[in-house]
Length: 266
Image (cartoon, rainbow, N blue to C red; front, side, top):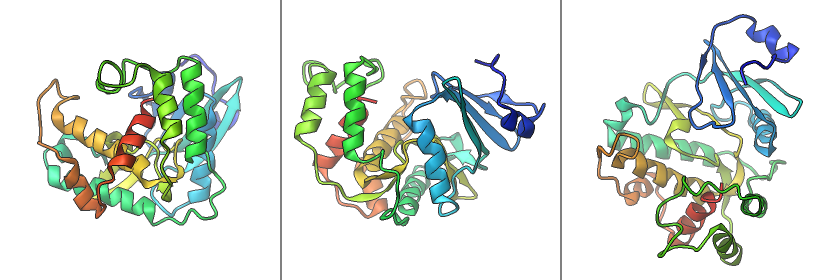
């Protein structure tokens, strides 16, 4: 993808500045990290359009990248944004301080929940739209069965993605709407001087049930602490209730299960 010529409006900003590549979690994308900018190049999608739109709507209400330029050329989207300062919440520094990490993750969600979304015009994150997108993924065989939790499919789970989709359609809960990140996992949360300094990868951000983020956060906390990303070396005995206590939220098993399983189709 690096052979692509940059659109003129973006080239005018980045010029000949040096950059490094960061492709973590962006399988079909190229992410160029400059000194002060980040440029994402990827196929245009609902998420790339939403990232630009929701960022403009939010403005400076919460710390997110400022979109400097967004354009689409030949089906490829180019999003140039400011670079968030700080460290990912999954950095070694914070993984070594579990209580602080959990509290910071909770602090981030509370920041999102303070935003009034009553008049937000962007509704792609609502459950109706999410289920439509999930159905598209199922019908087009886009569900990555190698990147799901082991218990989701198989003898003790669902037979296949279509069966899971039908279950989701028949068991949808009422929505308690707040501003959600949409992919609230530790690498998408940045911290500086023990405060949230920013949220990245906001293509799924928008109004949705608060458990959309809580469920994904619990999964991310569990995997980061249980050794999934450190060759099986367990760091901390994380319990979901620790995060819920920090949030001041009662456990809702129905919604936790629902939004956890919904994410398996993306």
